[in-house]
Image 1: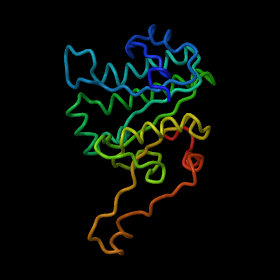
Image 2: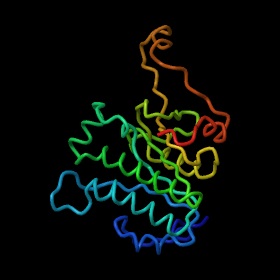
Image 3: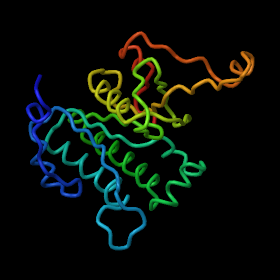
Image 4: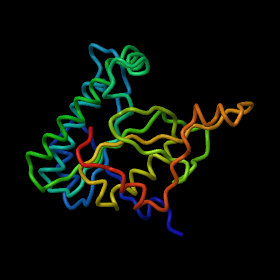
Length: 219
């Protein structure tokens, strides 16, 4: 089969450089924004949450609209709409208000695409905690929801799979949603305890069924 270098053309870019982004995005059918800050609290940093998760997100949205890219996908994070949740507070305290800047980037990107009319649609994917230590679980072990009410873990591979599939399904257009793994049942629990503490896993027929639960602009 083909190697990744044979099917992917690599170009250097910077989410903080709108002009460079606009040039790179010409002719693209979709843009996936998956960047996040490599620095937290920093007075003189160049890759802080404000610069990357907010300003970089906004500039990417502007560049996508300017280049007339049909679809923009932003990979954000669960808990961004719950700033006082302990997890959100911990992450923002440790990493330069990262959750607030992610949320601000989401909202401004949505506003920009709406102002642009039908030029560019958006999809915002909010995964739970990202793990590289476990194997991806695939469709039947995923939980999709809206309103930022769930938390949990998910691999980067499963997040990438959901993101790619979202681009192929019209019902994901102009939506905001969270995705995590279903919670695993704890060993030693009685059947009654499991029924009380764990909602039965939602099973999906296919990816069309998975995304059919979404409602537009539910952020």
